[in-house]
Image 1 (tube, rainbow, N blue to C red):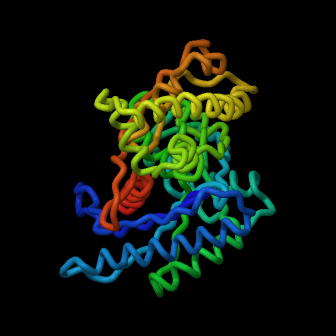
Image 2: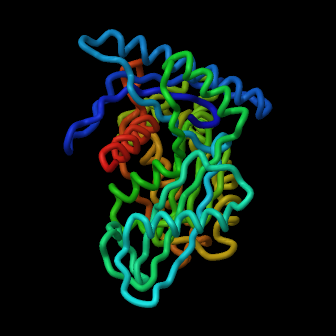
Length: 363
């Protein structure tokens, strides 16, 4: 769920090391218009109910399919706010690290970092250092010091109530497990992008974009931009259909387009880039104020606009914000292509399914 759409995917978890299989999927988007925060929350909950209905209809067309047994919600700002907390412990001698030691330190870190807040919707240790060195497998190792980074997320109460009501109607009897989009993209980048421990992560979804400074595998700073796939396509399409615009952007990238409409799209891209340069430049300036940004930029977006956005973020305009004052080196891993129809999952849904699959596989 983002600020302008809600998608639902019904997946079968792969056994052993098998990949998950998405059996049905649907997304419902809000029209491009100005609205209050409260109105947006109500409309997104309605969109979620609509997407759930469509996904269930598609799922029911398959043979031999059982009932849905688990329910995860992956959301982002403005509905879900993510924070990072860090803390450390020292020991007098080499101490064997156990789950209990990690749990106790994590509890202390959260108690100090958010003393008056309620229990977060999610909390996960996302980085561990032993004796100053990062490790993905701290258990049973000997160390004299341990440092943890913990990601926590809180859901806006009113939105949570509306969302869980919509899902309770579509999937009765299932407990909703909340996860953040930040956690999903951080996990995806760690598993699929080499040398991404220090990078700027730009995550472009339907309703907006998230920019995260990653250092040592931990989110150091975070900023949001209103510019997402929906608003970008709205600008470029003018009075045309966004789906047709996506196809024309793809044709432009492959030099297979030369008619008047494609020339109009090319001109519109230039105008859109000017606006995006100002909008993203403001966010990058905020992130770079305390410390210049890493030169590696990892970009997540719909496959059709990846080449265009990769070139856009690699432009020299943004070099002023990097540690070397050179343009960003853009890495654009492909999650999936844009897909239509109830039985097809877009990039956001596939990323969410990857998070759920990884979590279940390691549980």
